[in-house]
Each structure stands twice: as C-alpha cells, then as structure tokens.
Length: 365
Image (cartoon, rainbow, N blue to C red):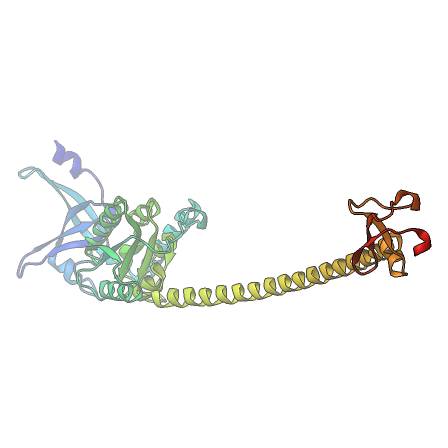
C-alpha cells in the first residue's frame, strides 16, 4: 500500500550536493547520494547511465546539482529512492543568486549587524583554530602567532574544509571550541579556492552557528577578494590566515617599543616636572631669604633706635658726659652730703669703671 501510494506521487525538483557517486562499468543504472547543503540529510538517486553520461561537464563528487526525479518505494528492502528524469549542474550564476538571496535574508534578520559583534581580546589566553588537516592555513596562523607572541596556547581542530562533510565538521568544531572557557578567540582559516570550493563557508547553518557564539570569531577564508558569508557574520574579517595571526595577538616587539617609548617619555616628563618644581622651590626660598633678611634688617634698625633711646634715657649717657654716681658699699645711691659720714667708704661709678673713695670734710676737698 505504501508503494502504491508513493507511486502515485509526481516528480519533484531537488537541489543538492553529490555526496557519493558510484558508477559501475556496463551498468544500466548509476546510483548517487544527494546531500542537502544546509542540513545533515541525504537521499539516494538512481539514474540511467545514458542520462548521467549526457551531463556536461561530467558529474563528480562534491558537485552541486539540480535533479528532477520521481520517488520510488522498494517493498522488498523497504527503501525509498528517487528515479532521476533530468539532471542539471548548478552554474556559478545560480549559486551566486542563491547566496545573494541568503545574504539578504540573514541581513534582514540582523545576523550581520555590527551591534552584535564582540571585540577581540588584546591578548588571548588560548586560541581556538578550525582549519584543514595539515593545511598551509594552519601553518600560517601557528607560525605567525608564535613569532608575534611566543608561548600562546592553541586548541586546534583539523577538519574537512571542502566537500560534503565540510559544513557539519566546521560547525561542530566551532561549537565545541565555543564551549571551552579559557578560549578567548576562535579563528576559522582556509586557503583560497573557487566559489564552489568556498561554498561551505556561506552555508546558512554554519553562519547561524557562528552568530550564536559567545566567543569572538575571526574569519580567515581565502584571499582578499574572497567574500563568503562567514566574513559578514564573524566578529572580525581577516583578509588571509596570516592577517588573522596579526590581528588576534599583538607583536611583543611593537609592545616592547611602545613600553620603552612610554618609559622614556615618563622619565622626560618627570625630569621636566622636577626641574620646574625645583625652580619654583628655589625661587620661593630666595624670596623667603629676602623677606627674612629684610625683616631682620628692619628689626635691627628698630633695635638700634630703641637702644639709642634707652641710652638717651639711661644714666650711662650722663656718665659719658663726665658725671659720676656715688653709692655706699651696699649700692645705696648718695643724693645728700648729710647722708655720708666722715671716713665712710663710698663707691664711685664713672662712664668706664668704678673705684672706692673715703669721705672727708668738705673743706678738705
């Protein structure tokens, strides 16, 4: 009943990629596995050898084709296959048209929006690298990063970067690296190639997987002129794998030169500041010394004036004019001759020194 129901179905057009092609010499039928380019799904297509042979250029694994086929159900094996009625290779123009439609769709959703992009770290702790097995792109990234900043740790995933397995392999590697906590940046690197060779990096499922990454992603696919959709969704687009290495880590030579220049500049600024502050301090000290000297000189003049006044009021001035002061031996000043007894010793103080005398009668003097 299932077979009868499927047999009543009409033909359908399918767009896919040849994942497996099994031609057998002399066989009437040729089997091929057609894989969906966006999801992990495939189906079997059987075609007459004459139909396959009439396709130009000849079909080969990994090629994108459009097939018009009718479903068939084999009850003996319980399997579903499609009988090809027409096969057309997908031309470059068709591929570019499909890519443009996908680009417009993703852009309208904001997948390529600059606001959702993450900045690259200045110096990553560990770098995730997705690349082909033992590829030149892997070598370029590893060697140039080591040259710029020796000792950077890498987590490398060598996967298929071309063909029917590329999308699933690259997507899985990116998601795995994004889950590792100490990976600060992920680089997806591949060398140049044709538009068909680089189609996996314009695949919608891969683009959406990169958009969902929390870790910054660098696209380093092909050469400067190549522009897969991965370049638009990545947080940073490098023109080549070598350029990616230069973007994700700084050059220790350049950083050392910058630090040295900053040290020299800081020393120069400090010397200038010290010289300026020293000049200010010296000028301030000079002004303080001048002010103190002026104050001392003014005070000295005041003292001199006061001393002159004191001398004018002091008995010493009177003594300088020839007068003397007569006192008893116990320093009592004699102001009246009647206070003195004959023979009493008296002390006489003159301007310079003093001497002792003995009192006599006035007529004897």
